[in-house]
Length: 118
Image (cartoon, rainbow, N blue to C red; front, side, top):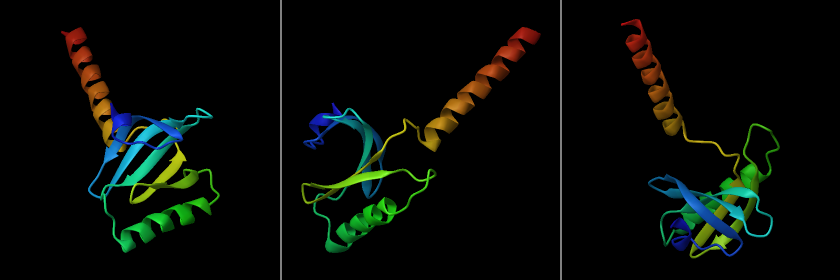
């Protein structure tokens, strides 16, 4: 289970959404308010000063942007030797997942139409 790997005191982690070269993103929810959240972490267990500053700047910039087109940032939490960026989770899926699902839908439609026309 993912929650055994990542332990943030105010959040329950339910699934891994992204595992990149520099960051990890998890889906979860607040333990007190049950609010769905996405939590972004640095992958490096011992980030250097520049990595920490860049991550903190990402929080600062997004926190100060007020647009319905930009995901809301809730907080920047201290996590181990770095930070956890807590953001809104609207239940979306990655573009890669969407393409895979879309291809399956198209393939199934073509397959069905060929079977019906024979």
